[in-house]
Length: 183
Image 1 (spheres, rainbow, N blue to C red):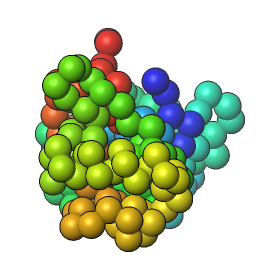
Image 2 (cartoon, one colour):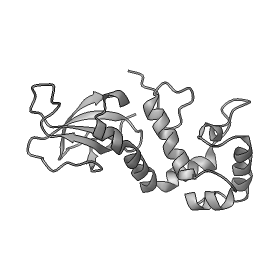
Image 3 (cartoon, helix red, strand yellow):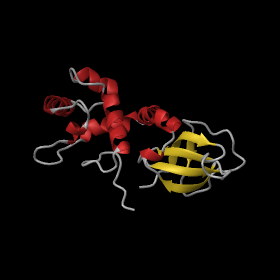
Image 4 (cartoon, helix red, strand yellow):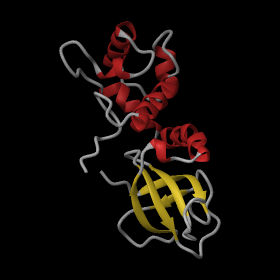
């Protein structure tokens, strides 16, 4: 799945130090599918910084020259790794309803496993409480989830932790946010 927008994790004005390239490069994460990508930036653009939102879709791009390809978390620079958590939080809070709806619509995976149990800190007891509360009324925000489900770990941070787990381990057994790479 392709993203139309991505957030900058790191910007290398002269490219990688170990290569003899002067091509400006940005390491980015996709807004919808959390794809980690390496993109080249137009030579006339010099004001790219972490957390900038860039258009990377198939139409006319004003900042991004080309998409070099997918990268893994191991390919990220130290700066990009340090920005990863903050940018994922920025994405989650920028589209809060999308991520709250995961709590509203999550269902069984197998006879013994439920999608809600894939979130760090959510076991059977929390899972059943979430299911009972959403039957009464769908959740409207992270604050609503926290208020209605007693002793639940921070629902926003739980989503962020799960996304980071999937970014760091693309071969995770049951992905919820990142589709397996079929390349």
